Image 1: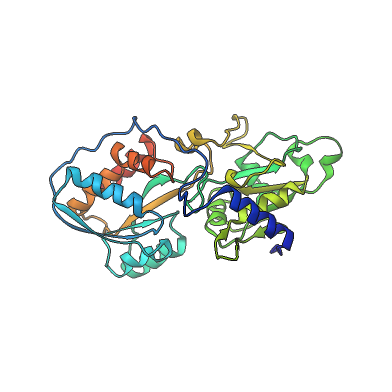
Image 2: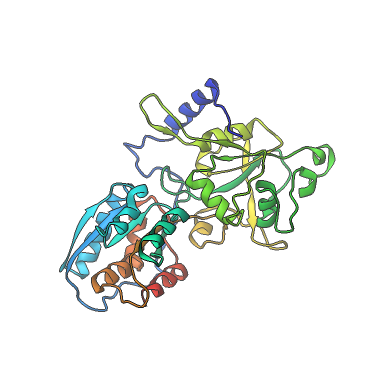
Amino acid sequence: MRRTFIASLILLATTILLNAQNPAEHPHHGLPQHTDVSGLTPYKPRQQVSGTLRVYGNNYIPELMKLWQEGFQKFQPGVTFETTLPGTEAAMAGLYDRKADVIFIGREGYRSEIRGFIGRFGYAPTEFDISSGSFGTPHNTFSLEIFTHKDNPIKGLTMAQAQAVFGCSGPDGKAIRTWGELGVKGPMASHPIHVYGYQFDTGMAGYFNRVVLHDSGKWNEDLKDFDNGHQKNGEVINAGIYILKALADDPDGIAFANLQYTNDQVKALGLAEHAGEPFVEANPETIFDRTYPIHRFTTMYINRKPGTKVDPKLAEFIRYILSREGMQDVVNHGAYTPLNETVAAAQRRKLN
């Protein structure tokens, strides 16, 4: 099911990438993010704390980590940090080996990572969402949207329909494989739906599987999956460029990717959680309030044995990150979408 890249497609993708971004000059270049966090609860220390916190993980957030640490130290000057950010894939090892008090993962935790932790300690690590995924920033856990060719008449999909198209079946056990099954009329009704997406072992496909396919791993058997490419200098060409270029050439296609890789021959579809509900368009506001169903998020984990209290200095730092000030740091960093108060409050309650 793997798509072989042809030379012209790689050349086009390289041109798009070079025109769209220069990561060295614009590390957080992308589509606009949500910026108003005034509705979040401000940070108020429950107690003054001191000591050293060992931070480990996501290598894409050194600037954000600096903002969080310096902002926290304005309230808690007695706390210092030892910060090691080798990368998301290495993050959980910081808890496995007890060399970190808190780890940061630039995506959702993988099931295999959680199972490995449980195998070592006998209980799961405590997880906190610390930002929604970006609306459209390269390399920063961007949200995923569903696209069709611009000439396709459908306006949106329910999540059940998306499952039936991209998976082996929907909630009712039936697959959707022709456009007529989605309500398209005329000659196109009998056309097969051609499905495109990210390679199955990527974080993007993993999250799509979790949210749209309900973690079944049972994909449409005809889905054409794309992996990243690379420029001659080693710079990554995101597979989303390839996916949406393939969709642009296929009026019968449907795909999942991100808006930053769009072109004028494709359109993003609105999504509804349930039949009869209005379709929600993907934009910075719907990613912030999480009404768009495929928003993604980044996470933080600690090793907390059930029934025990969190180290006070660690608890205070987590509360700061989940506060108005901590989310303003996310806004100032410019890559991710901040949490809204409903989500942040739910995360803070995990400290109780």
